[in-house]
Every structure is written in C-alpha cells, then in structure tokens.
Image 1 (cartoon, rainbow, N blue to C red):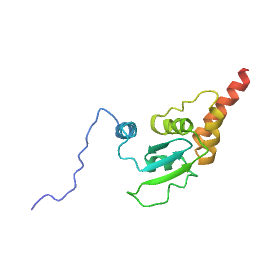
Image 2 (image 1 turned 60 degrees about the vertical axis):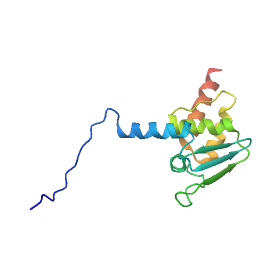
Image 3 (image 1 turned 120 degrees about the vertical axis):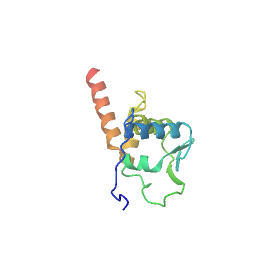
Image 4 (image 1 turned 45 degrees about the vertical axis):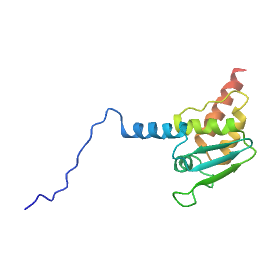
Length: 132
C-alpha cells in the first residue's frame, strides 16, 4: 500500500519569504509590471499594486472591485511627488519628501487613511518646530 501521509518540504532560503516577496513587488513597481491600480493625480498617472496600496490606505475606495481588473483612483488636487512619497513608504519603507512637501504629504495621508505616513509627518513637523 502506498504511503498517503502528507509530507512538508521545507525550503531554507537565504532570504526570508516576506523579504523576497517585497523585492519582487518592488521590481514590478519600478518596472511598471503587473500593476492594477491607476492613480490619476494633478499632472500624471501613477501605477501601483491595488492590493498593497489598499492594505495601507484605509479610506481609499480601492478595496471594492473585481480581481484582475484595472482600477482607477482620482486625486486631482494631489501632486505626483506627494503620491510618489506615499508609495515610497509602501514599497520601500521610506517616506521621502522635502520640508515644503511634508504638510501636503500629511494631508494626502489623512485623506487616504494612511495613518503610518500621517503620524510620521506629524512627528517630523513637531521635531522641526521644536528645533526652530
């Protein structure tokens, strides 16, 4: 009689699976591949992974919709640089913006429900205010 037990095959990777997954998503983002979210901003269209953005941005209405479809998010009063800053935090763990953009990034983060970015901007603005 054949052995019908289920065996787990463990693969020991040099890189943790979650790090490997993020690396793949980063490569897809920078290569503009496999992206299903179009973000229309004041002067441009930015592409991203809807599932990843939806996990961070709680108020964005991108959670509804069918899988496999291109989804559009309209932010006509938001600049390209502000959205790129927020996506930088999503994909690379780094919120990059200059001093003049911080308030705009914080406002966009608040509107989209991106609490981590909003809090980071608030802390930064407090630190700059205390240093002045």
